[in-house]
Image 1 (tube, rainbow, N blue to C red):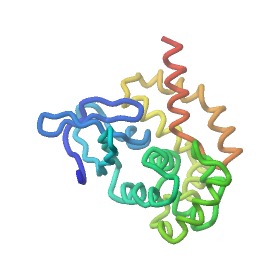
Image 2 (cartoon, rainbow, N blue to C red; image 1 turned 180 degrees about the vertical axis):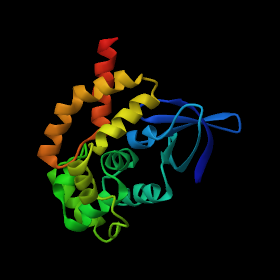
Image 3 (cartoon, helix red, strand yellow; image 1 turned 180 degrees about the horizontal axis):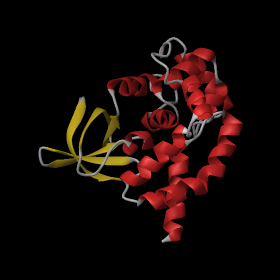
Length: 210
């Protein structure tokens, strides 16, 4: 198992970071939040897990060991593969997922693309005794308080992700503004903002503008 990769960031895409390790570029699948914290040319260290399939070897990267551990625990639930587990972490932090499961919050789980109401109910049952309680204050309640007292966290994540992908600050600000109605609608309906979907929508807006 490859426990982590460390080296300069060679390239960034919406869901992939290329880390140069010993002269080799390692393609690592990451959430938009993790991508947002990286910059091309700067040194990075990502906790990783290697998913082996008959026809592929895929390396998934995480901001820290806790995120990787949650990623692996999520896959112990029936019907959850690495892509869905990463999607869950793309929408919610590890503590937000712990809080959602411990409080039986179906809406938080259905905010993840690919999870319906029945799927959320099943996941709540299967993960209840596995994820444990939130470790800190970065869960849903913390996020909601931050949103009520200052700039929405999703705007900062999205802006940073676009800057990391090479867009100018003004372009990033305009793209964030363009998808704000979509984000507010999702927040009102589900109580959370799907950052991966917003990043894709923002990129489409930027591509149309060029």
